[in-house]
Image (cartoon, rainbow, N blue to C red; front, side, top):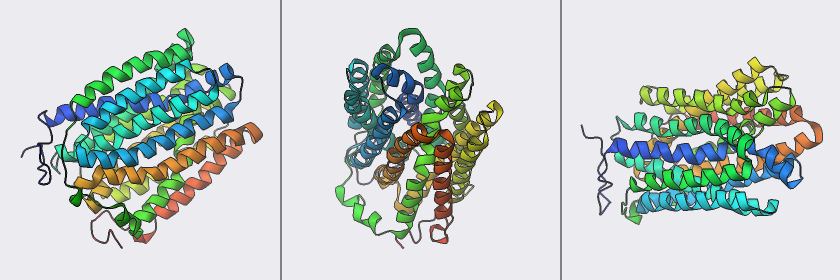
Length: 404
């Protein structure tokens, strides 16, 4: 059986490159974009010290980047379904490199909001849903889960490597020069990934209207759950490092906690891809939310104990991997692969809402009352998300009843 799937609505072939070279490009783009975005925790304190401010205002910079990432994903995923991934990924390469250079050259904190908060966030959003849609178009249904797991492993691998690399570079050359170096890496790597993208021309009549999602009770409930999980999902990414340092953990190990989560997620994503369609992806999503909530609870009670912090990071990585690997299968089952980029882009705006509110609120709670109340707060919101996902309306991931 051929790896490529046909696109009856396209006036051009999806791509002349082999499907697995497309998957390699998607891996590389995700490695760089998410690796840079999710390594922000090791930059937080150096940036705050440079600008003479506290955790709260700088943590809000990460929240801004997360929110623009999801806004970019909602727009970019739809454009990718209509016109293909290539132009979006090329724009991402330019936006990421300019955003990092602008951040490195910034003379005031507000300038970093425009550079990192907007451009780096948009670059990540342009890449991610469009690459998911590209994989959906490039692989058969049988091989798609493995390819999707490989693509998503790029996110985990970047999260493993980039915080450690960022910490080493900051120690050697400072945070500004580090971002300038990463700008060059982004331009070259994401620029290459753009050459593997497709230029499909899908008829607009075949694309799902946003109003269809707005009328779907099942989608709205799924969306509400992702809004609620967002604060707890991003709190470890933003604050593991500072929490551990504050608790007396060695800086190198503290910086590595997010990397441990990423390393765990690489293995878990590949394992989920290998499972294919043998487990209902909706049940995998529920298991993932339980892991994410459990990771926060372990962090909350850890008291800075290294073994518990590592356990929390591993559990977070498993939950993260299982969730993002299963979600495209859920949405493709409901709405079809030709709409996958746009639908998943809209779905992830819910995570953007949580990402916008969560780290910013946590930063100010930490400034006022310490880490304990902040971690407790996001643990509660994650429990709410888990409860929403368990409601019977969501049922399974079958296409039937998706507009109920």
